[in-house]
Image 1 (cartoon, rainbow, N blue to C red):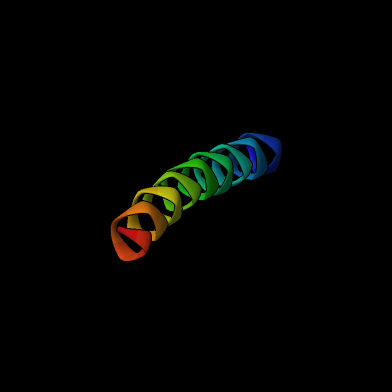
Image 2 (cartoon, rainbow, N blue to C red):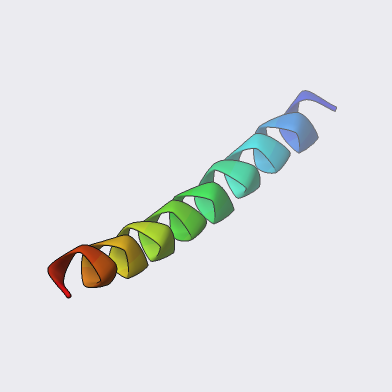
Length: 33
């Protein structure tokens, strides 16, 4: 059960990182324009 929670947290952190990186890229493009 602990292993499943670790996998869940790792997955959420990974997807959160992807979302934040995408937002940062789009925000940078808007600022540069």
